[in-house]
Length: 255
Image 1 (cartoon, one colour):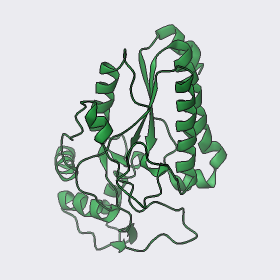
Image 2: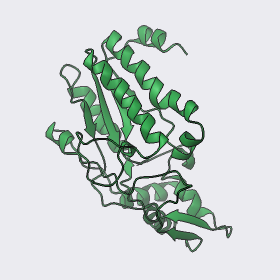
Image 3: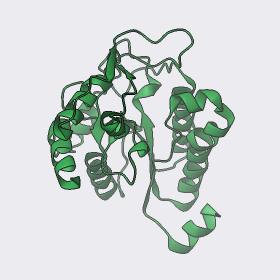
Image 4: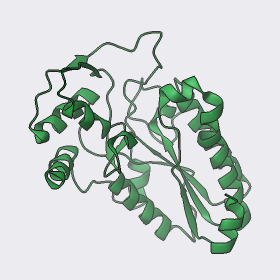
């Protein structure tokens, strides 16, 4: 598809770049392919934003940080541990380079996301429902070491709408953070909550409290994002429902 031709035909005031190869293991296995969407696409869109004079918000990740000194402010120095984080950081640099040339572009970093999906594998959180529902006897080892802040895509969408609506005619800061205000959860914690609302046992899910070994794709322990900069803009940094409440309602509706 010719992105420039489509954009020129329809015109636009704001665009969101939320595309990514978000699976760290996949990015490690095929970095060249992953880089095309994680780094090359945002660079192209930022150049186009400068040329066509529209607002571009690039969705980046908490994985640009090493997880050693949370919570992270927007001005803290990135230090990604793995290929995925490095590629997303390259995307950030490309976007912000166009900003230096006059483009209206902003980076919004978010953590792991969940929400309504066509199929559970679309989200690293929703896929846990498949794990819980697999009562075949297969055992799963589940991370109970890395602290996460699962954030609902509906809340992210609201934040993006507010930013796009209010800042078409005035500049946004170069980098912003949004994440849920709910308590931190490990993936094992998330699994327990989902299982509770499915009313299913999870004896087949084994807690793994160990730090990832040398042969595993490195993942940061705690990349909590501070939302102070976003709040200072007057944007609501709350959430519509907590993780527990959302899964309660979502599962009830799908039964």
